[in-house]
Image (cartoon, rainbow, N blue to C red; front, side, top):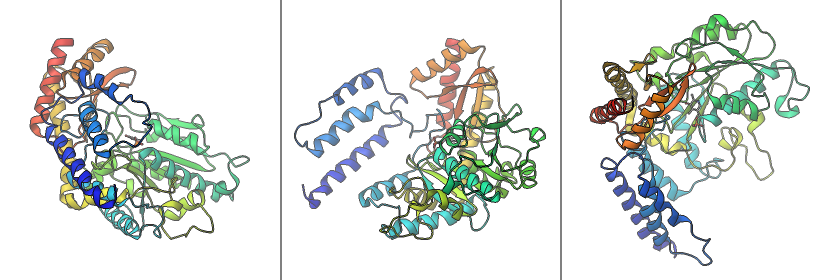
Amino acid sequence: MDLHDTSELIRNAAARAAAYHASLNARGVAPTAAALAALAAFDEPFPEEPTSATETLELLDCIGSPATMATTGGRYFGFVNGAVLPGAMAAHILATAWDQNAALSAMSPLASRIRSVVSRWLVEALQLPGGTEAMFVGGATVSNLCGLAAGRDFVLAQTGWDAAGDGLIGAPPVTVVVGEQAHSTIAKSLSIIGLGRKRVTVVPTDDQGRILASQLPDVDGPVIVVTQAGELNTGAFDPFPEIIDWARQRNSWVHVDGAIGLWAAASPARRHLTAGMAEADSWATDGHKWLNVPYDSGIILIRDAALLRPTMSARAGYLPDGDLDPMHHTPQSSQRARAVDAWAALRTLGRTGLAELVDRCSDHARRFAEGLHAAGVEVLNDVVINQVLVGFRDDATTDRVIEHIQNSGECWCGGTMWKGRKAMRISVSSWATTAEDVERGLAAMIAAVRAGG
Ligand SMILES: *Cc1c(COP(=O)(O)O)cnc(C)c1O
């Protein structure tokens, strides 16, 4: 095959992708047992000789497509797995053909320009302070890590300690304050950056999982506080003004884990939930959840991007050191041009479309809560954004109802633990979810309650 021969293959892939999307509404959300059994076809020995790309694509489509979870349709409500917007998918396909390395502007001036445009749009859409920069990473786990690493370096620098240079052995202790419901990836990030999973000061939360500001500890010395915009079960927002007040009295670093909820700031109807949030120092969010861009897209927004450099920069004689080069501001060096997907999503949505996406998903979530409440199901959260948390009679019933829903193919929801009991989460995170999908999902849930409750 030479470069001229690739066009037929690319068209073939595009045609198969289009057929897959067109099939989403008619198929069950979870793959069938038969589709999963057929995955055995992938268990081939490593081919001795080259294999045809056309035939490889055909195998992937014929066996792979039916075995997918239909997360990019309108009736997947599990975890917070977003779908993919058509405009973002199209741009992603082209960007894959470009195969740009976005590590350095010297490697891809195009990727660098698009990142800076998206950064400006995001700061505007999310109403963050001027001068804030957005860097693209693999997901909100990594964006949390970036915000916390910058915070660690900042608070230790205030004491005269160079954490990036000298590490943490012998450094003054850093107090990390988190809420009881902090996302699991905060502990993971703290472990990776050497602050330790266990060395956190945990603040109790209220019935929605919000930090109780009155319970913030009286600490001094270097302090980082981790707040949340959009608790993963309830969608709740921490009381930012009180927490940031407390933090400013201590010259501490404030990080916001807004993997889900940061987007509420883009909606005039829901922006009030994020009041005070813009006073923080760093904000983590995901593109691949609510913005509906392809996976492997997290975003770290930081008031002073230069604070990422001490830890993230990679120095060598052959490496240019451009001002906002992603390689010197994120854990990865080589990286795909992730900003292209977000650029296309934001450009095709526009300001009103982005707000509408947030509001529509949130309204659907509210309809789920109303419909389930009317059917006698207990709704455990105040539905403020796209997350609904419901409880059934007891833990065993909850397990049975969830299994019934997942097996129905009509929709897909997962379980969680909430304040000591099992519960079911409904997350409306797909642009493709329609009012009809919600009614179908509700009917499947209510049928599962009747059958299993
Ligand atoms: C999903 C999520 C994360 C982790 O994001 P990934 O994209 O899976 O790495 C962190 N915090 C919260 C609140 C989340 O919902």
